[in-house]
Image (cartoon, rainbow, N blue to C red; front, side, top):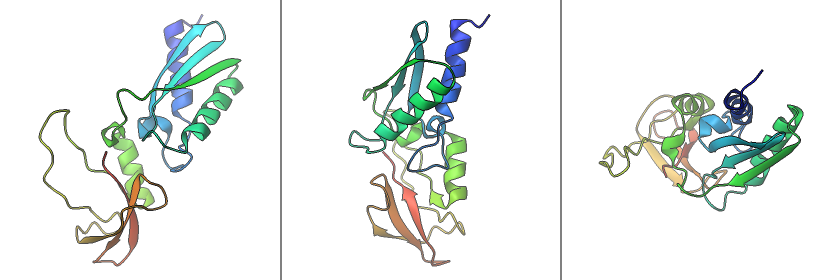
Length: 165
């Protein structure tokens, strides 16, 4: 017999495996937007999801994808609730997510440090193609509002940089 805790963990893993609609190389768990899954009644699940920013257009697609995955797993009643507090930050991206971003050609965000802690002074952005820190900002916005467009001055390749929040 599966205990509620084990079932919730299983459903959390399923929901967390959903790819981000804007960055399909990352799962929602790796992006750090999936806050939790609770079984609220037999066959009824509530999922807490925090968008990367309040106006994120992908939140509806994320919610629909989570609902589909959990319905396919036999959960008839799925409610995805948007949770804005505490707000999402780029520190929520897992180490694996950061590795996948770089492998995909997107410079991952720099860690911002512990809450209330010192702010990193290193402002360099490393090129995901050649590793050079000689990069130039081309546009504060790229294919999505959470990314900036940069160019590496060493290899001359353009690349996205996932902005720190």
